[in-house]
Image 1 (spheres, rainbow, N blue to C red):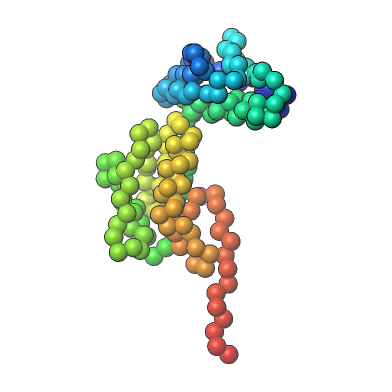
Image 2 (cartoon, rainbow, N blue to C red; image 1 turned 60 degrees about the vertical axis):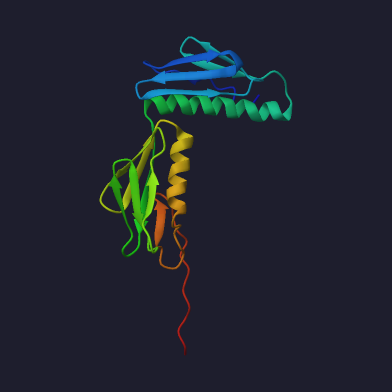
Length: 180
């Protein structure tokens, strides 16, 4: 058995999990509703206040899908209860962010400002001009949008300028040495 796959998922109070045909799982909670079609080979059962995922056989593909399916459901339950967030920091002279409605405007040293629209179900919150918090209930969307923001100007190793995750450590390099 998959060590992760065999662990039951606890359903907190105020959260409902429904499994429809073709393994369409719908999770409703205080923060919203998430639904996802999971691999049809897996057997998903709601037993009381837990969700149990079992696999039909011991093929390598089934073992892989077992842990994945369980983790996806657990992430959905966590999303509708507490939600997910990623914090990004902007470092560099003249680098800043501004918010206008659902549009995030980034000034990153290019000849033009970079404008990004918040995707459905994801919101960005600015703290000052150089701290962006990406929040949402879908872990995948939050992570993807945070990665897209970071990709607009990745941190560089010489001065550390760019957009980085708050917990990310940039390995710095020593620059050129001057003439002797």
